[in-house]
Length: 115
Length: 114
Image 1 (tube, rainbow over the protein chains, first blue to last red):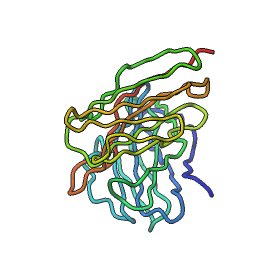
Image 2: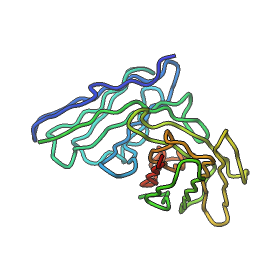
Image 3: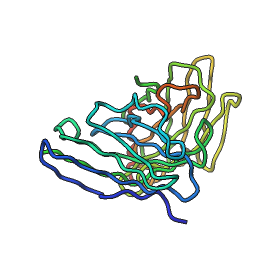
């Protein structure tokens, strides 16, 4: 079946502009996660959703970052007033249920470059 | 904060040899996972080992877990060129609040020389 998809695959934006990144999880997966990966680094957890609820937003780097999820489907990560430090690959993952022991399936990522 | 630390940061071996990567973590876990990342297939789950398991096998992969030392190792036997990738260990998510996604280390970059 279809895996996790993300769009766009690449995004180049000017400093100060807003960007919106999209994630389509695997159908039936209730949990959805957003991560950020800077060049040569591991993944940094940002936020997760159980259904359309995000219980903890403390992982978001700043108040310029926000995320929404519609039901148990599409999620969007919005970055307002982008900064060069926001340049990274943003990865989305989904799992059947939230919690330990559930494999997370990752999308191909969106490479964001802020000039 | 970073939970897993992989060692070595980079490893280059000849095709056919075995590759061993290590991971250390800081807090108590219920399970630990290993992922592989390469440009062709993105980030892919390899294996999950639970805290009550000491060793687990999957094809050419062998994972060990020592909860007393808070460490895990990933062994790839009979390496192939296609194994060239970055390998990450990950712990979590944790229940009961807090940063509840997977926590990844910086990874081991493995290069298989033909």
